[in-house]
Every structure is written in structure tokens, then in C-alpha cells.
Length: 134
Image 1 (tube, rainbow, N blue to C red):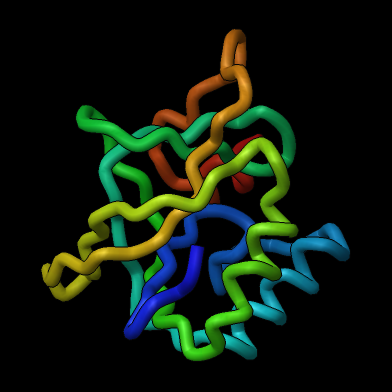
Image 2: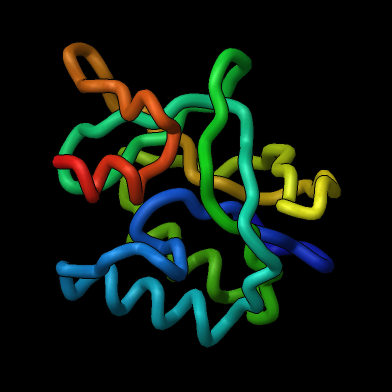
């Protein structure tokens, strides 16, 4: 999957600019994101977040709102690097995000595809709220 012209990425977990990065892998992945993309702003996307471990799992769909950011991809090889960081439990797919100014944009995002049986929901849809309260 290529980035394509003017590609964007919606991030909702450890890749957010304001997320704590206690793990080395998260620090390195965010550094790659910051070097290869430009943050466009806070955003939301329809779906739900779950907490399978220290990281969140996004499942798209109606009935929920997930909070995050949209980044404009400047370096097309960035997505391949982030695919490796996300691992086999995630697939990158296209979604529709709403930036804080109200504009809607098409953006890649990482959908969790592993089993979520018994995994707690992050009811607020905000990874940072969950991190602060766990």
C-alpha cells in the first residue's frame, strides 16, 4: 500500500504528539512520524477504542468517537516503517477523520484485527484519558 499524493494518517495512541512514550519502540516510531510527516491538528474518527495492553486498539464503526490527530505524510516510506511498528495485529486502511476546524479528510489509520474477546473498552474514546486513569 503506497502513501499516495497528499496522504494523511490518523493516529490515536502512542503516535499522538501528546502521548506519553515510556517504551523505546514508541519513542522511535513517533520520531519517525515527526521526521516524515506534518501534524495538521487534533481530530476524531468514528469507532471505538479498546485496551488489550498498554496500547489502544481501534475498531472503526458508528456509535463511538475516537480522539487523535491527523498528520500529512511527507515521506512515502514512512508508512512502511509504521506498518512494522504496528505489527500483525493491525491493518492500515482508509477512513474519514474530522479535524478540529470541522473539515473532513481521508486518512490512513490502523485497525486492530486481533481477537477482542474480554478486552476492556476505552469508553471515552481517548487514549490519553485512559492512560491518565489506569
